[in-house]
Amino acid sequence: MSQLLPLLAGLPLLIYFVSLFVPSRQERLLARIVLTGLSANLLLTLLMCFGTDWQQMNLKLLTLYQTEHFEFSIRVLFDRFSAAFAMLGAVIVLLISVFSKYYMHRDPGFRRFFSMLLLFYSAYNLLIISGNFETLFIGWEILGITSFLLIAFYRDRYLPVRNALKVLSYYRLGDICLILAMWMSHHLWHRNISFSELGNAGEVNNLFGQHYAGAMFVAVMILISAAVKSAQFPFSTWLPRAMEGPTSSSAIFYGSLASHLGVFLLLRTSDYWSHEVLTKTGVFVVGLVTVVVAGGTGRVQSTVKTQIAYSSIVQIGLIFMEISLGWYTLALIHTCGNALLRTWQLLVSPSVLNYLIHDMFFHYKPGPRLQMATLTDRLRNALYILNLREWNLDSLHYRFLWAPFKAVGHRLGFLRGRTGFLLSGFCLLSGALLLQSKPVLPDMILSLSVIFFALSGTLMVLFALAERESPVSVWVHAVSSQLFITLSILLNSDVPAEQLVWYLSGSGAASVAGYFVLRWLIVRERDVHLQRFHGHAYEHPRMAAVFLVCCLGVSGFPVSPTFVGIDLIFTHVDSGQIMLLLLLAVNFLFLELGLLRMYVRLFLGPHQKEYHEVAFRAS
Image (cartoon, rainbow, N blue to C red; front, side, top):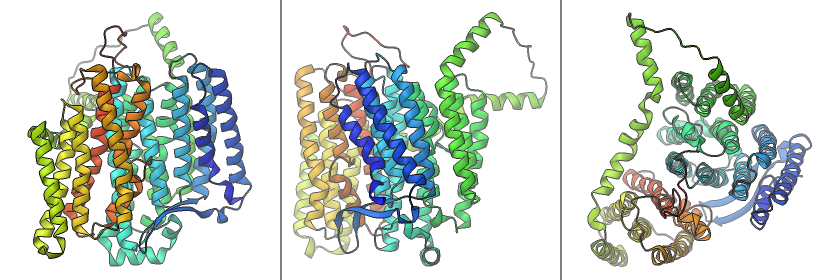
């Protein structure tokens, strides 16, 4: 029976591939295929939850790469946490699909919506049955990109596209924190750890006793990843921005399933950090502050979706507090109740809003005029304004988290054009010569060279993030940055040739294909730059899809061997090389953002040609 467990993720993925071959106009056929497949998936979930022995649901499916101290394997694990989330997901996805069959009727993106929904559900199931960090991270990444595409579902409008990129930037921050947790756990255990091994209390306690700083680093990275994914303080503002997609995708993503995956991450890793008082206190404080801040903010919002989003954030904050206190069963019940309630609220919100507007139109009564006479009144109104502005979290994030890196990228304008290409080529040639002389180089020169090439690669990524002129320049510098990172790792450690193949093969093929797509687009459209949105997906949807896959391939998304290669690259960074680690983290954080920003500018947004209608800014 345990052999059927991978079907929880495999069956929705199979339906996804089938949906790609259904003609766009065949709505009834597509809906029938999707609903039949999801009904079968619900029956399979019921069988897994109530008809099998969970103790046997822990197995290794596939080993992609293995060395003496490293193993990238696909493992699955099914326990009470997986069962609760699997049952919740199966019920909600089926209900949303039935609703969307009518809600999305005659929408031009009908097939695209269901395709993304199926891909999301496959990633969701893979995540909740994952047996190690590597498997979890595959689902984590795919779920993030489907979120991005569904927020930007109305891709001819300005705000959905803009907010999709903003949400992706937060998701990518959580991704990097999870990568860093995997990196440090490898140095602590000297092997790839599975979730079932985290339950060994004696080994975990010895780990905290012998390597307290490293063990706490893993716990903090897990907490940050969970806080980002579940929109907890100080990352709460992205969830209301994600409501620009269709109501049904808002319900399934940000009201019920995706927003609770931070909760799942904490529950899955609770055996590791629950023995440490400081970590439990951190989880409790994050939840408590979120309840206070998001509770006040949600009460003063003017849109129904934003109010529901902040209400969900508050409840997830309470769930964080319950998990910190060890009340795992209560947290599971609370998660299921909150997810079902928010799904229902979001689905009925258009009807309720229409009724309230109608009632207000015929029964409007002006409220009494208030005067601020006392200090209490002034403080209450000041707090009202602060909550109305969402505690200025968006501006603070931009000022202290994103703006400094963009400022560095703007100062690198000299890399634009021929000068930048010649400088990059000279540095790469110098690195190749240093690599040939590596055995005779002094340790100090070698260490400085490692930092220099890692810094060079990171600066190129920051230039690609800030560049607003030539998309070809952005592409070439983004690809070159990965060559600099490769040189840095080769100078830092002896890397086997097969690991280089894993890292460079996928990104290399995607780099060449992406370059030719850009050249094709420039020849076809001529006026191609990054100053504005062009919306070329309207006329070139297939090229838009190909270029998106190329961007994901270069950035290490699970569509190419580079995904495994990035994990291998981090294993060659020692635990004491903090500067190199930070440079790699910044590089991979902004690489995907820079490439997808270019994709958004070129293929999404309002179309630049005047014979296409101009859509509303928001959905």
